[in-house]
Length: 116
Image (cartoon, rainbow, N blue to C red; front, side):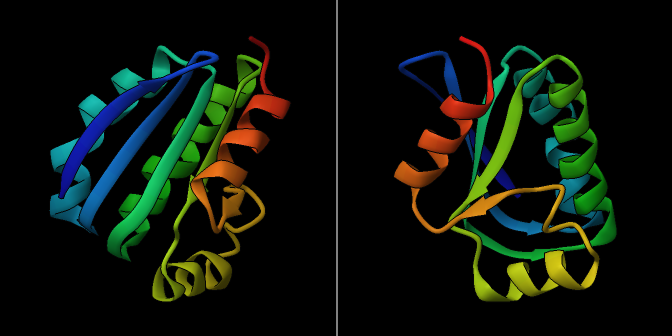
């Protein structure tokens, strides 16, 4: 699992994940992911290159989203592939992790849902 971070205008942080968010992948990105997300109230997680999410990966995403939400912020996903979307739906996490097809839609949603 690879992770890169990009600071965008309006205090938005984009985290780009690539690979499998399984036990190994989640362990590789957990500390940097939560550290970066913990410093922002507006987070877009780009999942275009994520090919699998295991329960440990769901825990990481949902836990981080809840932490940000408690601070009045918002975490959203974008570019979720059909296999990952199916995992989110089957696990009942699609309501906790808003997902948008495009980066622009995700940016608009995160800006509308979090203070500046």
